[in-house]
Structure formats: C-alpha cells, structure tokens
Amino acid sequence: MVTPQSTPIANRIAETFAAEVKEPAITQDMIREMGRSIYETYLDHKVLVFRSQDISARTFAEFGTIFGRPEEHHVIKLRHPEEPTLTLLSNQDEPGRNKEMKTSGQGWHSDYSYKLVPGSATMLHGTSIPGEGGDTLFADAESAFAALPEDRKAYLRTLRVRHQYRWSPDRDDPWARWKYIGPEERKKTPEITHPLVRRHPDTGRETLFIQPRIIGSVVAIDGMEEKESTALIEELIAHITSERFVYRHKWSPLDVVVWDNRCVLHSATTKDLDEKHVRRLLRLTTHGQPVTPSLPEVGHSRLSPVN
Image 1 (cartoon, rainbow, N blue to C red):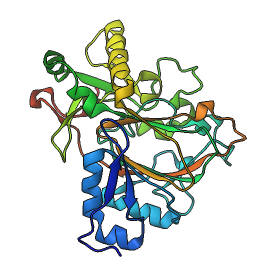
Image 2: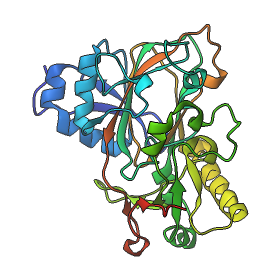
Image 3: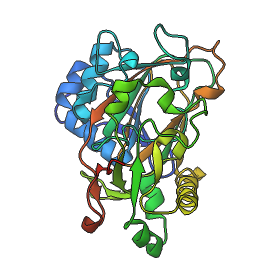
Image 4: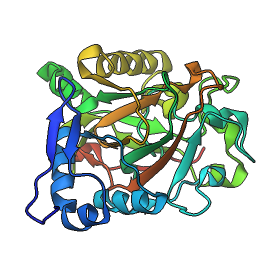
C-alpha cells in the first residue's frame, strides 16, 4: 500500500552512484503520493533502476513528471505516435527513419547539452530487450570532479565549452548526429557555450559538464587552440569514464531507468548489437534549468557569436 509517508527502498549498485529501487512499483498511486520522496532518492543516487515495470506508455509519461516538465524531442521522426513527450529508440528499420537513427545514443553524452537550457532527467523503459547485449553505460561526472586535485579543479572552473548539436569533427563519420536532422531542425540548434564546471541546482554540488566531440556535440573549449582543446577534452572524458565512476546497466525486459543529466553521462552500446536482436525502448527527457556556473564570473550559458 503506497502512502504519502512511504519511503523508497533503494540499494546502491555501483561504487559512487546508481541504486536499484526495490519498492514501490511504478503505479498511478506511487506517482501521485510518492513523487517528492522518489525525486529525493534520485538526487541521492543520480541513477535509479526499477525492475519489471509492466506499465503503459501513458503511465510512463506521467512518471516522468516526477522529475520535471517533459520535453518533446526536436527530431520529429523519433516521437511516439500517441505520447509526443516520448521517443522510441530502436535498432530496427522503423518507418520513415534514417539508418543512423538505429544507433542513436551511441557514445558518451548528456541529453540536450547543445541547448541553452540542457535536459534535466532522462528515463528509459525497455519494451523489447534482447537476451544479451544492448547495455547502457553511465558515468558519474560529479564524483569524477570531486576526485580531482584542488588546483586542477580551480583551473577547470574558469573554462567554458562550445556545443552544437549538428557539429562533428568528422562529418563522414556514420555516427555523426548532423546526418539525421533537416534544415529546420538545424536552425533551432545554433552553437552555444556552457561553463565547463556547473553547480547542481538542487544539491549545490559541482560537476564536470563535458562530452566527447563526435557524438556529444562538443566543438571545443572556448578560446583554446584546437590541439590543446582536444587534448583536454580527451583527458577529462578518460577520467570521467574510468572504471570507478561507471555503471553498466544490463537490461531486463520492462526495466525503467532514470538518470540525472546534470551530473551523469551515458552511452548506448547498440552499435555492437546485431540487428537480429530487437531492442526498443521508450525515452522521456524533462526540461532542465539554466546552467549555473561554479564561478559566477565565468558566466551563464549563452549563444555563440554568429560568424
């Protein structure tokens, strides 16, 4: 019986973050009566796993409202036909989609980092799961920043990062995102800059806000020569994705996983999954908040000057 006083039972499953919620199951009562305590548990662990949730697309969409206001994806072909705040991720040849969409999400990234206001929470519901393969990886960028030497933290707090959704250092790379968006969608995603180190709006904790260049939509460190910029980006990604900060989620049918894009990177592994193994998931991302810089003088997110 779910009551307003109920407390989620969550067990930590990785070294620095991620927890499996044993109780309660996702129901209308749970969404209505336990939203705040579920949200606080999410802030504590950054990634939550709910096993075997046999729920409708409508209930899944309503579950997302615990974590903020759901956002419709700007790539229209990805949207669910009945629930526009949901997208369907699939490694199959879905009608009307480009082949590159079958590996959407491959590579470390944070959802909507290329927007002035990036995404807050993202959640997935595994509706068709292969017997093996198709895992999702998560990396704790908050704990990775906390583990750095103090002088390194101080330097990184002074930097900004250029982001753009369709940008790629190699536009011939088959995983480059610019290949599956059209002119109108490109107009809606101009280049922007974010602070490299952001402060979480709910917890106040600092985190690295950076991704690789090919899939994560990162152009460069603002004001830095390309060689130096690339070297720093690669150094930070290697640190964030080192074993002690990574959780690999092995999917079971009907799992629901929710994570905090403000302090966690994630990556699909579908590029290595044979298409004969069907993998389909529903996804929802919530509107976030403007990025708060760790140092006020670094400034908030802004559009880059038009060349």
